[in-house]
Amino acid sequence: MNLIQFMGAVEIGLLYGLVAMGVLLSFRILDFPDLTVDGSFPLGSAVCAILIVSGANPWIATFAAILAGMVAGFITAWISVRWNILHLLASMLTMFALYSINLRVMGRPNIALLGENTIFTPIENLPYPHLYTMSLAMLGVTSIVLVLLYWFLSSEKGLAMRATGANMRMAKAQGVSVNKQILFGLALSNGLVALAGALFAQSQGFADISMGVGTIIMGLAAVIVGEAFFNPKVILTALIACVMGSIFYYLVRAMALNASFLGFQASDLNLVTAILVGIAMITPRLRAKILDFKSSWGNS
Amino acid sequence: MIRLTDLHVTFNRGTAMEKKALRGVTLDIKKGDFLCVIGGNGAGKSTLLNTLCGDDLPEKGTISIDNKDVTSLASWQRASYVARVFQDPMAGTCANLTIEENLALAMSRGKKRTLKRALNKDHRDLFRTQLSRLKLGLEDRLHSPIGLLSGGQRQAVSLIMAVLQPMKIIALDEHTAALDPKTAAFIVELTREIVVENHLTALMVTHSMHQALELGNRTLMLHEGRVVFDVQGKERKGLTVADLLDLFHKASGLELDDDSLLLS
Image (cartoon, rainbow over all chains, first blue to last red; front, top):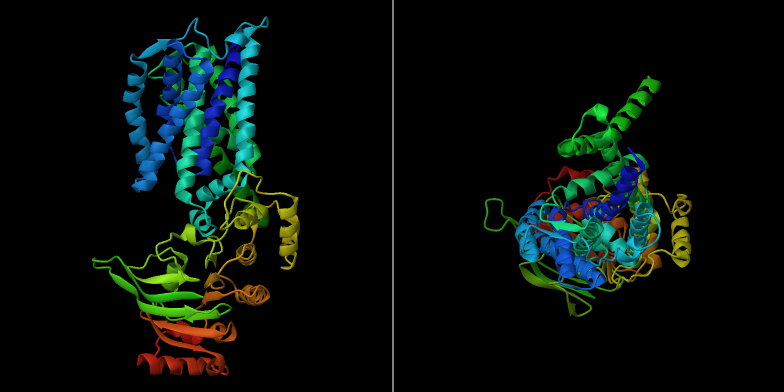
């Protein structure tokens, strides 16, 4: 792997750190496995791209993308809590519908943003190597979101949200309106994912209808890899771990695809990802088993 | 003053599993009452408590707290009136939140939750003082996930959590049933202290006739969804478990055949 590939992986890893935090919010904190993200990531890209090519200010376009993602998450949550539909099914429905909506939004399967004014244009115009400045910009965005999210999750409102996912019955007994927490939490989660989609479109220079496929897997990979490595106990380390997990995942992925002796090609991506996530999911159990075995050995 | 009027609760209505859990329970709980509810399996004691807390909604009857009708309020909307300790120590606390986070959550029971930090120095000082009375050393473990504590320790913290904010009534749902006898005795003593100290109104469901006579000022027995007797004051003084069984026999016309009630 050369420097360009390395920095590229770091940059994408940081960007998908936003997705990872969104997935952490739904999957771990609210205990609501949410597949909507596969649709809200391209939704963010689509809304942002179409607004930019229509001449809108890129900041407004990015903001609109976040709002669109929040609406998508809200709809999933509403279907689930209002009509008591299983979370996975509710999110599948929204994800499925979003494909059509994204096509409608874009009006065509892809939009090129080359030469358009994006929020990264001022950074691209700096007299420093693009390679580093973009990664630094992503680091900035991801860090700001991480700090805001940490601040929210340690507030009274955030604590109520965490209790909702951890023990719904107890949360209710403490006066928490769990439905509102799920509605808002999923909106927040998908808003983050749509922000990632908008930033992806702007940094990569295009929006494409199929770019959301597997977003949930990337997010899960980041969360699970982060947990396997950092074993986070408090909310701040959980947030940092999932961003680190995301960077780590993209680095390993880049290495696997670039190591010629392994003989992987780009189309093997899903297989490589599935193996990586599988290993990360099995590792903690294996570790527990080994420790168990060791201690029982020691006692006998 | 808490007034339950003609409460009817039926589960699985219209199916073969239909179960009439409450069939017209009317009950006035005065301010400062400590009411112990006993009854055999399926008598409706847990349903009575769940209905008071808003987990089960009655199909008929009303519940009012200080003349405010709360019958149709969901459990979370009622949390400012009713504090609760569950039977299962795992149910009343969040295992993967820390001790201080659990307490902070209870700090805003019935209040509007803001974007202010849930934990600050004042809170921690208060939590430490409250926890130190338990003499379990928990005041030095504020940052530990509460899941690391034993069932008894978690019930003790649940009791502390319940009284962090004012309430109209504290609902205790067989909160010592899942504990070993020694720990149960500790929790019973703690309950008594906390209720007396804070002049609370309490409703405690218990499976132990001893407990039902020993604790509080009023004993209520349910049978098949109805109140079979309700004793307090002079009438209650000097009552023994044998007397209770006798009372039950007179009131219901049945011999009590539930060993669990006799043995406890």
